[in-house]
Length: 446
Image (tube, helix red, strand yellow):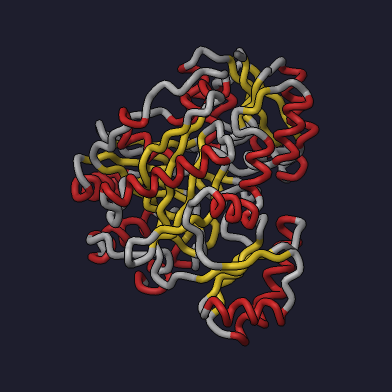
């Protein structure tokens, strides 16, 4: 058990965690950089601690400062949210060494799942389908060409420690592979400190479908169904929905059972997400595992009625799972639009600045997770996400109508946002029909 939680993050996820802690009667500590002194969550926490200057490496990624903030504030637990240190094994072990409970998985599971190649191998051993491929710490040109010829082009080159769409290239022929290989190695070394790569067969029109899992300290694991995450640009998600238009009840059961089996094999004890690729024939393959709460978790909450963050905290406190698999049911349809400070007319250029007008949509089936307000300064130092707009309808057509209405009610002035992009997306007949894949936005929408 613990009484005070330090929220090791910023933005909307800091507020999301704060509200879950309040629901459980826990005190909260908010951290902030000097650039975030006006952050909304700081108005509501019980204590607040500045952890450094604007640069993430000196503040939100500064393990020593964050552990120090937990100690001086008397926090006995830390919730890392998503991003920053959420999947950092060193941070997890630092919490353990200082008798601070990390609200997340054990460091061993985090380390295993954080290495994409090792995760892939462990899931293969657990009987979870994986795409054909190979992992190497020293993948030279000759070896890469041999593997690609055996797999057949196109292939995906990816950093083993990668994430967030970084350290990835799709190559369609031998010459493209020769050009891309040193670039991916350099990007992997710069972003993740390792040149370890893996090559795998690339599916041309795959869908990105993920399974939400919950595990506890007593060996129980359940899944909460799937989320459809194929609306992407440069491997960055823009819109998510649950359930997926491409997943039948039978396929959902098979994917969920595989995710539970894979989680149990590594002793997973927190909220996590299996990211899968789904081909046109209905075959699914493990892609990676995110050992944390996801940005898009609200769509699963809306269709299941389960508070994922509350369950994650309870599980970290040693409580057994509060529900059984047979109690999980999907009701209706939920859609989430990421409202980023970006101008899609200018190649999705980030648009930092001051929010001069901020009017949120409303209604009984509309949810907005945000940290912004009128007068808020959108910093160029951090992610451009301003808000997550989520709607829940009785079915997908109703959810689409609710989302269009909510987007038109959402008024932002001072910075450009992706609201016009989402309105254009919702008017596209292929999207409305559910006919899309991970490359659809870039290849077919515009």
